[in-house]
Length: 93
Image 1 (cartoon, rainbow, N blue to C red):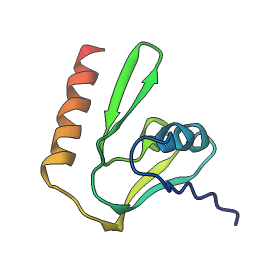
Image 2 (tube, helix red, strand yellow):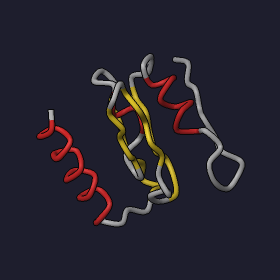
Image 3 (cartoon, rainbow, N blue to C red):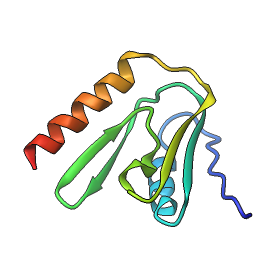
């Protein structure tokens, strides 16, 4: 089974989130495999912007399963903030 791995070798924004979002449309799984929540990246779909810090960018593709790997450090506040933001965005629809 073929796999694609996107690895960042720089500190800061190097476009990993954008590349993963492009590839995620054809992926079954997207895994955030290490480190903790990042400074974040924004994904724009139509007129909506989604800011993600811990959840993999593949979350916007309904057929793609997203996972947070065992190598990640999770600040419990971050997933709760993402859930709150997602609910607020859905309520605006």
